[in-house]
Image 1 (cartoon, rainbow, N blue to C red):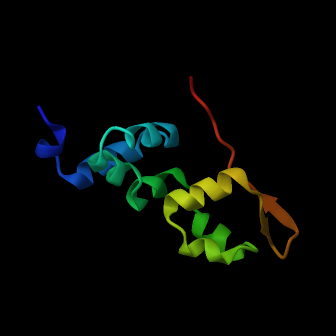
Image 2: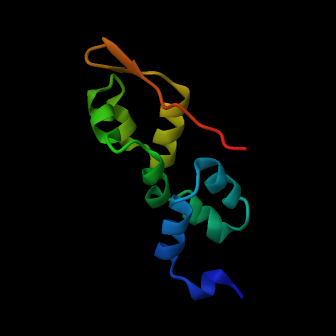
Length: 98
């Protein structure tokens, strides 16, 4: 049974958003259909902190608003972000489940 024919895209996106960033990246390798879903803002917004928009607004890198949610996640995972006029820094802490 082809799951892409049975479930709507929005439903598959929701399912993927309940996995992990690592799983979404793995799923993006399966097919062009799953790459589009796994790379979507709907999926990656779920991996970001609920206050990520406030974090970006307070950061010294407001241009992050122009990035996709996946790019924002990647940036916040790798780089420290300066907040409150440079008096505070934040970085996403990644947890790996093996």
